[in-house]
Image (tube, rainbow, N blue to C red):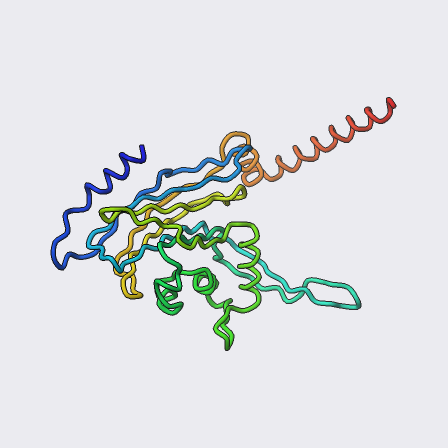
Length: 252
């Protein structure tokens, strides 16, 4: 299957000629990822081919998950105890964000050049946060965005895979991106960039759908579409479990 995919991509790339305009074609090995009860994560592979690629060109692949609303608060000490304070709302923070590159990002372009193309975790968080984001004198995002980044990195839903893209012969390339066990569901976009001298000279995007399947899908849809029924079901299960535990201990 993978060899057929590579061949299909290669056939779309015509023989190079002088002054040929750069271009990219790309495809994922999976268009849909199903999250079942035994899902323990997986590696997602993207194959692609370039047109007009030169030896100094590099490839950057970005996988973005659906946006989400976040409420972030700071910890503050009040009367000797820690409490949540100063809440801020963020409306379109990516639930998943991963980068794979053929070289370390710092060797491909400057932070300013990458930010101009919307590439990089900091640039993405600041851009998606909109008016809620501020940049300090050091050029770093404010503490709220820094906390969001740390949380995402700990949960493995934010990641940067240095050298995660392998350049193959004939302008072909392959990128591998890890999806963690707690991969958020929704519509994803994979963006592929061809960089030359710090500039993105070509790009291509393709889509991915991550969805619940099996019993996981039933529970997820019930919780979101019928919250009252889901709540009653949980209470019922808790009552049955409590009754069973009471019987077990009363017989001893």
